[in-house]
Amino acid sequence: MGRVVLRLEGVTKSFGGKSAVDSVSLTVPVGQLVGVIGRSGAGKSTLLRMINRLGEPTSGRILFGDTDVTALRGRPLRAWRARCAMIFQQFNLAGRLDVLTNVLMGRAFHMPPSRALLKMWTDDEKAQALSALESLDMARLAGQRAETLSGGQQQRVAIARALVQEPDIVLADEPIASLDPRNTKVVMDALQHINRHLGITVICNLHSLDLARSYCDRLVGMSGGRVVFDGAPAALTDATARDLYGLEAGDVVGHAAPPPMLPAGAQPGFALAGS
Amino acid sequence: MSSVRQRYPEHFQRFGRDRFVMAAIGFGLFALLIYAMGRLGFFDGTLLSGLGRLFEIVGLMLPPDPGSWAHVKIYSISLLETVAIALLGTLSAAVLALPVALLAARNVTAQRIVRFLSRRSLDTIRSVDILVWALIWINVVGLGPFAGALAIMTADIGSFGKLFSEAIEAADRKPVEGITSTGGSHILGIRFGILPEVFPVLMSQILYYFESNTRSASIIGIVGAGGIGLHLAEAIRTLELQQTSFIVLMILVAVAAIDFLSSKLRFAMIGRRGGVAV
Image (cartoon, rainbow over all chains, first blue to last red; front, side):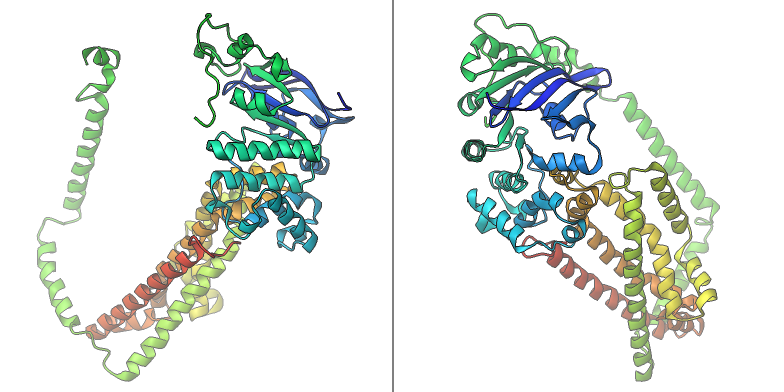
């Protein structure tokens, strides 16, 4: 393992007394591709959003190197968000703006606000955005409105936006949950490429255990807001997988304990995405 | 079937309590309407005898006739003035209302007190009718189209402020979140996440108000705030009913033309291809 970069210490998020994320502690070194797996409502999204600080932890700390991310306010907070790009299930693009403008939003933090507000991009910025789009085979659509693109194309625009942030970490919150199988592969390959060739740490929430196993270096299994598994994909036994995905009865957000085991012989209900 | 019925009996009741209550409310409102109409004299014959008089007036209006070419010229210029009052008033109202609407929108302004104050001031402006504003502005800047444009502007700041802020609040929060997640400031989130999304809604509201204000502008002309209304009032007062109907027809044509143009304009701006991205 390399130098430790991202550290979560007892991170908890409660909504009205229920814990969506319950004292999660994790250490993510540089350059890992981490898959966070678990059912809907296991706290995966809430966890990722807290790392980017779109959500505030109720308690606990998130550290990046020596910086306490949870204590940041104002410009340092925005600087952190710029270093920690986020990709969303619903792409979160401005639908009526063209693709290029959407990608350039990834540079917004680094520009003087007056210039950004007037859309006075420099040639360098445009070139950077276009080459990010080119690397995802999207440059020819740069002038189109984002809302006219297919889901897979929109997600690639969102990835290009993340790339021009020149981030240290990319957080991907169910990036393929709204996509068909072919686009799923395109997007997952892109995330893998970012990780392998640019050395950017990627933390990716996934429904599908199969995808998580084939793409990720490390899996973090969450259930009821807690981490119930943390290790290499090969170490994830069928029993643990059943723990993560089985039994609807325990399906309560903020369930304090991991749900009980399924009886032997029951099928684990994973691989939901793309179905 | 019977077992499903047993489990969800509430969906099988044919005459539930809710339905009875709704019927009672509907019947009550209808009875109130009949009573009120009776009190206003709908049934004591004035309406019937008045109906004959109405046909008589309509008959006197036909055929529409301006009287002379000089009249046509004067009316056309006044009509253009009316359209100009409406356009100027609507546009300046929209420009002034947008910042207030942003201050009044929950997803833009976090400070409760700022939101509350801007909302209440919009309410205050809106509670005064356009005709009252016209009378006030005539006292301030004198008779003429300037007073008319100011009246439309002040009256519509209130309406636009409310409509705009509601459109802004209804905007999808995901694009803003996308910009926030890159480290973009709140201002950038509004500029690139909210404004482009609500732009078509605001535009169609402005265009509708332009059309509707052309009609209002002919009313405020009656109290002396410029435009065709003055001639309309004059024609009615002097019982030049054929001229009256000619003026009404002119207004009708103008409003129809504006409606046609504004729908073209709206599609050009909102349309799928090549539209304006703010």
